[in-house]
Image (cartoon, rainbow, N blue to C red; front, top):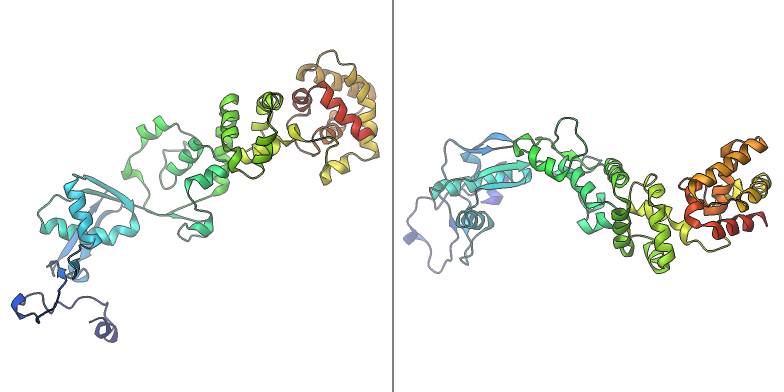
Length: 364
């Protein structure tokens, strides 16, 4: 049948040769399949909450198989019986199953059963417009966890793929439940945008309680790149420093991976390895700035963000240097990098002894 249909340029469908014949005419010893005697005229209507009324010409559906020759049911038949027996009232699935919905509706009608309310939602596509797959990074939930995304942020991002509530981007789970209606889902496919996910995750991180974010980071350290080294180095002192650094760290990070990376200055061993930009800041001029500000820092009576801010600003006024000209080499000496949380936060987190020691290391 298939070869003949292809030769004639027709879709390969069952030609109905046994549709109206008596079973007694079947050849001896044959184990037949069982097909449904589907309507041949008119159309089958799928009333879909997302796609609207979708009509399928019955001539295109044919008498499809519901029982194989070994007596086992096909997926198309089994899923209908299973859903009916379990009292399923609503079916929500990808729109790649829309054609299946037509054939399943034929079975429901043949059995005189109520057809569940169907909603066929668009699939998620990658940035290139192709269906999301592993090559786009579409892995399991644990992979997104290892990428450093917070559960609430990922949930917030996913709920807005193909659905929205006005201009609201950030919403609580309670708001999602209150506002969501499957009928408002778009028909067109949504594209997964990692930059947008990162932006939303950053909002959630900045809004997070410091302790809750600290706990989330500690929990995910074994799963993220470079996390094991941090986890192995955590003692009581460094745990306290990491927690104290959270306000400054979370303002600069969009993921827990970035948060962990930003915290590495806490765990760095002296003398610090400098990245290229930090090394350029600690040239002869930069080291001279460190040498100039060091006595004022050594004389600081309190080692707090506020007092250290005042000390460095006073030094800037005294020397005629702009604050940035002092902060940049300080940051490089304290963290080994050109970017970090605020330099006064870094000084406070590291403490007097460690901070002064790192500065002296770079002065030589």
